[in-house]
Image 1: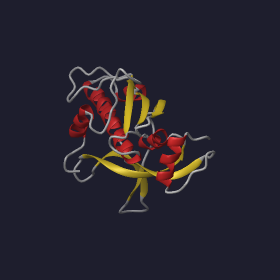
Image 2: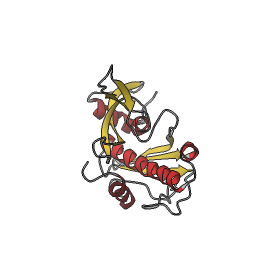
Image 3: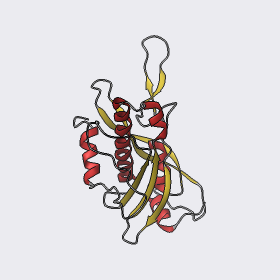
Length: 210
């Protein structure tokens, strides 16, 4: 795999060392997932670590955001077990983030564009008000987790992320703000750390006491 020069520099900073121009390079990288606290039922964010195979940094790491994240569950009787806590993934339903493109600008800003298809969630959650609400909430948590992960990979002000949703359910009668289908590039607006819509989703979905 051949790295473009800005990606080599970013990967070197993540690894803390130099990177060869031709390599398939693995490294530990941080990412965020949403989960429910057992003691309060609050929805919170949890930072996780994955082993990523780097080519395009955020495009690699974002796969961890939508993968099952297992934590040890202690048992009072018999051995414990590992259970998934990631609200964005389970054994039967996953979202596969599709990278549309990435760009690097001379001012140090990285652009990414992803498509998220919610067709599997629609099938599982159904078309009732409660089912559609669950799917829309997952869409908002997806945006939050991707942008929080981008803040780890880069820094606030150093990235822009377009997120295009396919197969969004109807939102009539649902609580909270709207989720728009968005677009893969201009003229639709990307998400950044300071995006008003991203901040709205954060305040709606992530409890202030997390």
